[in-house]
Image (cartoon, rainbow, N blue to C red; front, side):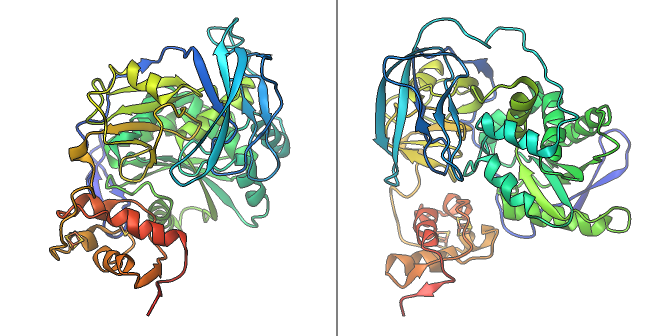
Length: 452
Ligand code: SF4
Ligand code: SF4
């Protein structure tokens, strides 16, 4: 752990970092500038927008839909409701397969008519006296899912939390260890108050007794803003808010690494504070979506995404309607400079490669990156030179060099512990596709199951 001077007071504040590995990840092709995107003429609204089951469509081809109207009903656990993000006519059903073979279907809506919510004065609804099950019901009704990572429906996560005995702490993850999280930074800049109120709503929904803002060192001034804003809320006495400053190194934001840092903080604080208990970790975009659903009865209609990469002419953070095709998103950023070698949604280190530029923005996409050939690792594969760089950066203490060699020769069938952060791959001077090969084996599960 390291200590750095507090910005104004001269006192030191302790930095809680992951115990090993990680990289300082910078990318000159990540965006800084913010803009609101044009509304798409055609919106492609998938019936699956997270890692779960698809919603059942409840509108017909040719039917007119309103902005925010329910168009796909979630089918129990693992599924989430889907809403129209623009008004218009449902003109057809589209279908495609993702790179891992998952089939997806979408309702295609042609923009027509007037907006119910865009540009209108919104009515705030009081929520402070609602019981937790009612808040959970509203969040489920508006189809709120985790807006990053796997994107599980919050209704599923709340169902798990309902079974927890002992205290629960909500951790608001404002950890910016990756320049491709620029959209979350913009959201925190523009909607800090909403994130703070959303954190109280989420805490009430899951009966959390504390809120902890985990803020990375490079953004530590924001921690004070969160706490000052939280102290003005009516529930501030009942649900106390703290901040923890964590390291900047990638992948500090990963669930495992963040939990290690928070537990180290808990250990230090144990004489002054109660135990944190079960940690429920949520990012600012998810928390803002909870705020919109409960405060304004609004589903997720749009989101901030970071658009850039070496093949994008003008990288920007855009506020984009869900259902906008990536082709339109890149056009809004000046278009593509030639043919990209790879298009990724999410961070280039850990994101998902997409095969079709007409795939739409969904609730879980926080970045869209188009890469030229020279930025894509693993294409020009050379021999391992045994430098050991991959071992030194692996946050879970694996030996990527050894695992890669054994996976390639069939000597290892499954790996356990790799969370696909991509640190090993980015530092490898031989540009070996370490993460892809090791993480593929990880999906088979098992503790270093060997073929020997
Ligand atoms: S082996 Fe897995 S966990 Fe370790 S650095 Fe590589 S991708 Fe990350
Ligand atoms: S970083 Fe690449 S070249 Fe170096 S030991 Fe690991 S696999 Fe081999």
